[in-house]
Length: 569
Image (cartoon, rainbow, N blue to C red; front, side):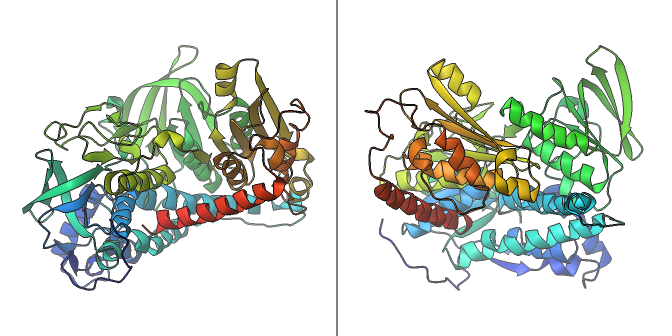
């Protein structure tokens, strides 16, 4: 398909908003009965509250109060079900390829990332870091007294940030700038090339497509034991306006640890529950230990226990659990956050009628992200093991390249980084140390550089952490890297770029890092591999340092371009 320009589409054929949520705020002009009706809808169907100025601004962009559906076309080049990162980038990339796309969303455009994931959680974490830094300021010779967390103000700031960023994912942007038809409603396949949309106004539309992409995402797993209590998940935790005194966090993965640490820093008594009594069991155990030492020092508690029952006791929840010694305990909490696993959103999609196979883990796809229906693809949490926003969007670009441009891009070619944004952060790319040892046995080399011996870490007071890089004994090709410590996520990009460009550890060690910067942790960790290989063995690229610089520079520019595409499909 040919490229096309980025002219704005000012007509209303793609769908448009006919009513603002602002009239349903406390200051709005709508009647009390209508306000009550809309507030109930927002709370129950969209899981958004309170409806204040900022959330009204958010909803105007991601789920207008009254949305007039598009006129539609006879056949769409691409239809995406789900308007999270995967669906948005699929439609944006279709537009750039010269195609006509339709986007179907029954809840909030922007999906988890904008509304209940990356954006609000990082806004919360930044406030928690500020509170912690103020309390610990005496370590830097600065006295800050009377540190007080104004939790309602923290959450107001969160809502302001979310509403501000929402423009990127808004229905207005996609209809007016990306020529995308937006349907607010539930999509369901009724044949191998047709989707029925049950619109929020009660009407229905039938959309025919040449290609389609399933991008319905996932949600928090809710064990049956919690079905009768008012629990929280990442979908509702950011609706809080009052700081809980006691918080139980079920699950100790990235979400549980990030939010658990944040609330602990706000002053909440936080207890994490894990059957094994450890955190981040998919990460390097040494890295997880450093994070837990920090969390424990801040007052968080972890219990190796299995929850046997949950009972609503007024505004509190009583958890009954069996501890590691077999004793039965009961404890009351103001809030319970469920963060023990995710499940894909595959219900009511009509996948059987579309001849799309799936399992309880999600939609089945091949390495091209193609389902068992060759004209239907999938991306994001509904099909990928790597459940990150950056992979949903990146994979969506690949879907359009394969589906509409006839390319043969493969998901297995991606070098996939990940970061858990606790403090200290844990960042990884490629294989972990355990995976390297399992795959290569004794034929592997491991370099570890402690943060405490790097000058910038010493001057700034961030001594806890390390960088690990893994290779085989035959080549300096980087198999993986794990970094834990302050700024780990930023440093990881250096190694990821090297791996994408097939730049070996030895060449990576020749990069000139401005002094003093924390990137020296990576540089000196890579320097360990000098002289570890026979003289005839060159760096895995086998090309000059000058050429390597060109390659790394080109990759860096490409990375910036990709980031731009993810944020502005």
